[in-house]
Image (cartoon, rainbow, N blue to C red; front, side, top):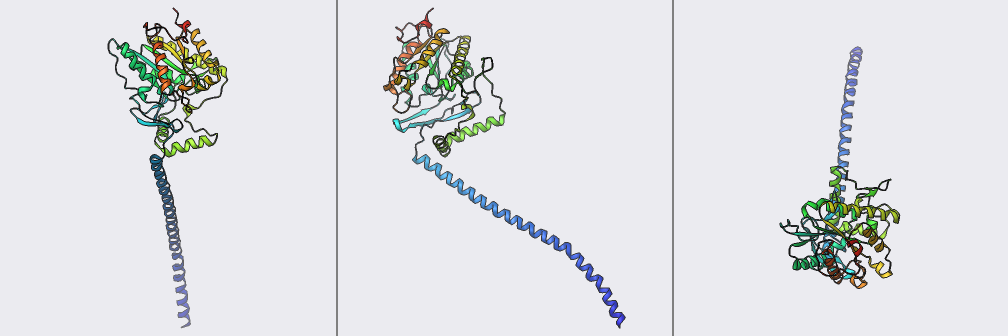
Length: 395
């Protein structure tokens, strides 16, 4: 019996050992599965939390966006779209309301199919003539109703005198002389102007010409107009960035608040300027104007320049910038006119530095006579204003 019992014990031992060994992989598999499920559950919890936070933020932004649209007037807001060549222009066929509460400005506006504040550009009739006015915000003139702008008044008056003439306006807020040159290149064949008038604002056009995205002087002080070399996806990203800024009231308010309270500038890269000396500003401005003159003449048209003084310079009596521009035009035989004698502080808004309705009326009367002068449109419609550059008009 003892042997049998011993034999039984010996036989059972390997069975127990085999059973214990086979259970270890099963336990390991079970443990791994438990950990995997735990991690999955943990991730789901965090995903749910993030989704909840994101939904709450999105909801808050939507509520804020709606509240701003209903309750807050967006100061100085316009409609612009990204342009790979020009940097920006008005949104084609876009409409909006431009507001400046300090000066009680609340002006409805509309852009044409090209993105400029003007009527749509129609093909010229067979015997038609066209005046093209280039410029920045002084030509766009969002501060007054469109019929009050000097561009609209000039066209109405000219067509009453010489019906074969029409006027096309190409001005956009913040444009530099380089961008105005690019706009002429881009739309020259479509507009086909006979006379081109460049409105140069002495208040900030010199500084705007420091944007190297559009023009700069190389080591030999030669003018360079760089072509845009950014990839397609970058163009789309910038287009989206501009769309968000122009569409969202929240983004617009945040950007302007940050820039107003800090030294941080969130302007798009196309507005980035490099600090340069006054001499450099004058050099690049001269080369841009001479290049525009060359291309206008090559197109068969004539160029004239209107010098718009800064309101603060009128107040202080500083004529240095105006004098420099007139000297440049005289030296290069470009007809030009200085609006300083015709304008006074009363012709500008009290806070905004642009022309008010009275100022536009004064400019329209002066600019019409200038545009139709013998050396531009070729008409004898009376004496030119005393401030005009008679030296440049001489035969």
